Amino acid sequence: MTQKNQRVLLVDDYPDALEIWSLYLEMLGYTVMTADDGRKAVEMAVTSRPHLIVMDLELPGLTGFEAARQIRAHPDTHAIPLIAATGYSHAHQIEEAQRAGFDLIVIKPCDPETLANHIGRLLDTESFEHGRQPDATFKEASSERS
Image 1 (cartoon, rainbow, N blue to C red):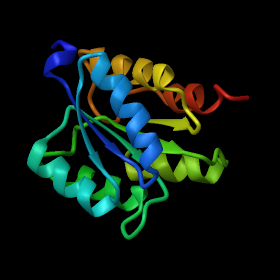
Image 2 (image 1 turned 90 degrees about the horizontal axis):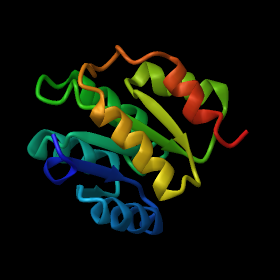
Image 3 (image 1 turned 180 degrees about the vertical axis):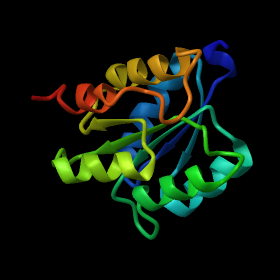
């Protein structure tokens, strides 16, 4: 599958992050959709079925944790790769993100190129199935800023 056919849903309540990430991913050929809260993210995941979702954990209304749980529970969206984006790298938050169903976590601020590399890696993994990625994916992404 080429990037031109790949849809990425970005979810963040910080408009600058959405704008920067969107512009960069669109420049790379991805089709980008955005949402600014967890409820919209779940609705868009079900109706648009993106190939991958990048979601902030601290969202108004429905948190990224709960949105991920709902996406994982839905039969049409359960296998979509999920990347958590957070400004916090506390161990308990990383563990909760894993339990909620995220496949990878990135610590903000995350430059667009790094995010695109993580997206490309998840989408290029032909055998990707939620839950089959090694735990090292979490540790690797969360320790980049150490």
